[in-house]
Image (cartoon, rainbow, N blue to C red; front, side):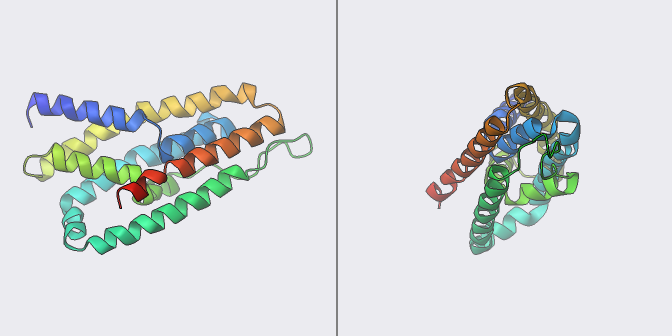
Length: 200
């Protein structure tokens, strides 16, 4: 991989990682509801889980999807259904009250966040585009480079969204504000699914 191609890959990985999408909307909501420290496993699962998915796709799974496109179509509908369910859970997360000082629900675990990458439409787009556009022969070394670049650029990007959510906690001190925030995050998560149908 040439230096020019590597720099282009870094740019693509950074821009695609920091722009709004399901992961970032969920981390923003998690930062606001649970804080940075409790969201760290979620963040690690996103970063490492997506890089692992790139390796698996580059190692041969991408060819399976090319040979049997119906499998990818089925996974798309599963992903959309799961994202809609997550949106409902975020919208109905109980805000903190004097009677119940702990918000209902828990942040994603590492494994939950890593598993989510397999049903995240934006994550699939990022991985498939990077493997197609930035690996000349899709050798395993080049696949590892792509996965490593995404891991390095993704973690600072998702940290930004989580910290942004944590900083918003000072403005979400009332149950009504937190409820409105959660419903807004749920709506944005649903909106992130719309482009999936444009490509199908």
